[in-house]
Amino acid sequence: MNFLAHLYLSGDDEGLMTGNMLADFRKGTKHIDFPERVQSGICLHQAIDEFTDAHPLVEHTKQLLRPQFHHFSPVIADVFYDHFLAREWADYSDVSLKEFSKKCYRVLTDNREFFPARLKRFLFFMRLENLFVSYGSIKGINRVLYGMSTRTRYGQCLQFAADELSRNYDLYRSDFTQFMKDVIPFAEEERAKLS
Image 1 (tube, one colour):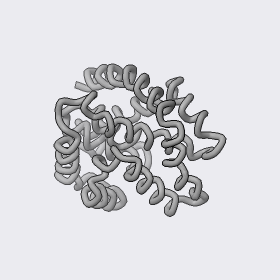
Image 2: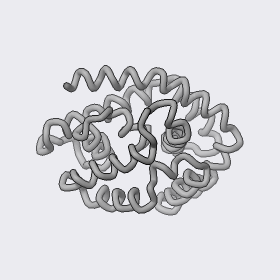
Image 3: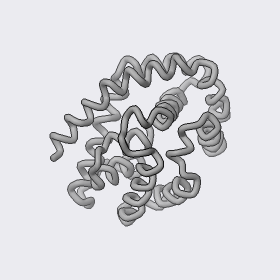
Image 4: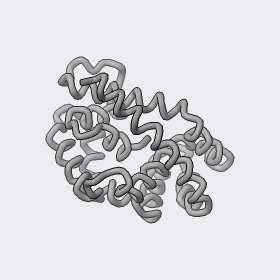
């Protein structure tokens, strides 16, 4: 799961949202210095990642991508799934994606004291580009993947991933839709454990 999905799966808990976003940007395994709910958000992120990585539908998505994109397949799958979540947001939330995005940017900005410099820079970019809303279009996904290709060693193939999404859209969408039926209740259970 990528950024939008992790924030969505945090529920309405601002501490969980902060930790869930922070998890991919912190170094090492220690997070004892963070407030309890931020620590819980990091734990939630890790649980969601483990569940996702072990799920057969996500593995199917990655298998479809591997012949062309090799070890970048998991990253591309994450971005594709965020695209489908943004595109079909109304199926998953009563709050508009625009309003949810505004809330996320506010929550993350309010808690940026816990963020390393790299995440602070990314947060600025997210807000500037309204990244989560842009995920809902192929053009937006293409821009994200192209940007990743210019910053990643040997990542030139990433710039072609949006073409692959367009070619096999329904196939990837089917994996995502079925996977969400499993990950949403899983995340709800994990949040209940962390309460």
